[in-house]
Length: 408
Ligand code: UD1
Ligand code: MG
View 1 (cartoon, rainbow, N blue to C red):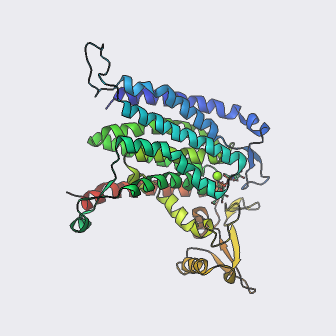
View 2: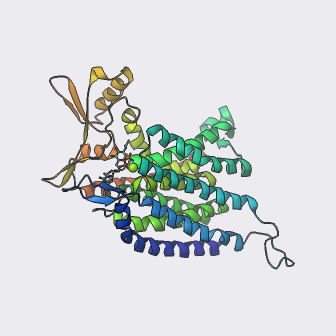
View 3: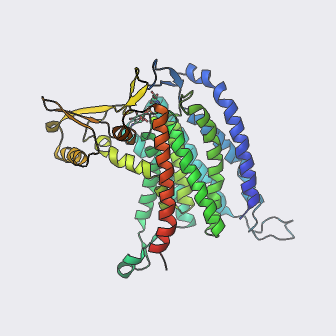
C-alpha cells in the first residue's frame, strides 16, 4: 500500500474542497443567465435556484483526479525497482494505468450524459441506455485485467453448487445493471433540499470506512486503495456542494450530479471488486426503487414530479398523491396496489365515484405516510438517518453475518 499516494490524494481533495466552496456562489448568475435553473417547489414563493451544479462538481473532481494520475505510479512501494533505472519501477503497471484511465473515462461520459439530460430532459429509455454504454470501457478493462466471473457460494449451498460458481456473461450483465441502478437510484430518491448530496455523502463515507477496514485487515489492498483514490475527492467536492444544497438550497445539483455520483460508486464497486458490498450501502435506494416500480413501469399513473406537496400555511411537507380507478389498471397493476394496501404501505382514499387516491410511491412520501407532515429539513434528516442505519446494517451483514455464512 502506498500511504504517500493516499496522503497526496487527501491533500488534492482538501484543495478541491476549498476551490469548490469558493466557486459555487460565484457561478450562480452564470447558470441563471444560461437558463439553467429550477423552481424550489417546496418553498412559499417557489424561488429560482440555479440547477445542474453537478457539472461544476464533476469538473473539479476530474481535475483533481487528472492531477493525481501520476502519483500512484511514482510512489508505488510494491513495484520492483532497479538501481540501473535510477529507482524507477522495472516494469510499468500498464494494467493499473489503463484501469484508472478507463474509470475516469466512464465517469467523464456520465457527467456529459447527465448534463445532456439536464439540458435536453431525456426520456426514460435513454436514462437506462446511457449508463449502460458509459460502463462499456469499464467492463472491457475488467475483462482484460481480471475476467473473474466466479461467485462464492454460502456454506448451505456448497453441497449443491460447490465452493464457487462461474456465472460467466451474467457477471457482466450484473455489473452493467449495477451502473444503471446506481445512477438512476440516486436520481429518483430526490426532490427535497439536500437529499441527493446527503445520501451520496453517506454512501461515500460508508465506502471509505469499508475500504479502510479492509486495508487494515490486509485484504485486497490494491483494490481498496484504488477506491479510496476516487472516494476522497468525491467526498470533498460533494461536501462543498452540500454546504450550498442543504436546506434552504442555494443551488440544485441536477441530474448531472446524480449520474456522476452513481457512476463513481459503480466504478469503485466494479474495479474494487466489492460490488455486492456496495449494493448493501444502497439499501434505501433499493427500497425506494422497489416501492417505485408500479409507477416507474407505468402500472400506476406516474406524474412528472413525485416530490412531496408543500403546505404554505404550516410550512410542512405533505404526501403528494396519484389518482386512478381500479378498472383503469391492468391486472398486474391491480395486484400491486392491492398488495401495497393490504400491507398498509400506502395511504388509501376511495371516493364514491370509484376514484382512488394514494401517495406517490417514493420513500420520501412513505416517510410522510408514517410520520405525518414534517418540515423539509426534518424529512431530509430522517432519510439521511435511515441511510446511516443502513450502513450499520450493511457492515453487520458484511462482517459477522458473512463470516458465518461464508466460513471456510
Ligand atoms: C426525479 C423524480 C421525480 C422528482 C424529481 C425531483 C422519479 C421517476 N422522478 O425526476 O419524481 O420530482 O426527481 O428532483 O422518481 N426540486 C425541488 N427541490 C429540491 C430538488 C429538486 O423543488 O430539493 C425540483 C426543482 O423544480 C428542480 C427539479 O425538482 O428543477 C429537478 O427535477 P429533475 O431532476 O429534472 O427530475 P427527474 O430527475 O427527472
Ligand atoms: Mg433529477
